[in-house]
Image (cartoon, rainbow, N blue to C red):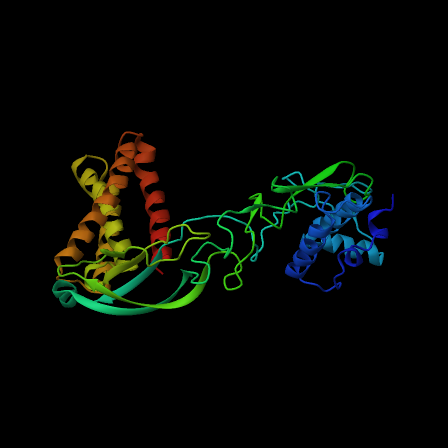
Length: 371
């Protein structure tokens, strides 16, 4: 049996040496359909099918392809070129495949039959507090996947049911015999079928408009009715106006999130309020417990830092803003109470030294996040 570098995989697939992965995939599909043993009854059909599968398994994977090209050109490799390998040996990656990465076979274009529900589309609309309180309507133009009008979202015009994949026979995977190939060792390599992407089924006669997916990209206009008394974070959902599903599955929703900046803390303000909440338990315990005055002083300093951080960004009169501020303080206090109690009962050394270290580290982290 000829060794790997003696075979011209590019010639076997009839592609150029600079061919893209998509071009290699299409070439393999074309040949596999003609040579599959269930279709082609010629004596050498099975052997030729294995050969093109072997070629595709190598050329469709970037790392294997680079290795193959290098071997054909006679470029030597050191042991460092084989992940986990030694000089003269052949390494396998953590996933058990040569060169550390399994070939997935997933491509951007395929006539595979994979019915999947469409995803939601998220959109944000920014309003001032007054407009949000009154309610408003906003027109939105956006791009989405829409059910194909030609095949009515099915992917096939003439057939309502999918067909068994002719390349893998419905198995979803192709088993390539690599026995005797010096680069891969002895045994078999299983790869996901590129025709059906592992589904085992394909669209019988792909629609010329959508390519078999049952959906096409289009621009859509929609009017969002934002009700009165809306607030920051509220959502307006329009059913069925998200991305269409594939092969006849239901569409997702268009989800509009209301953004009211007057009701929202800035990142620095959130950091400031969180710092205040975290430090308050240390202030209270430090000044109430004799001998823990250092803890209280350090906590008071951090409270002051938090207040300055908040004030610099500007205070708001909005009730929702203050409600969010209070919630953020409480979240910080929850963590602060636990740590303060642990330090209070941890002994003299930790009661004085540990708070200083903790506060310095916390201040550095919070300051970095705020910036």
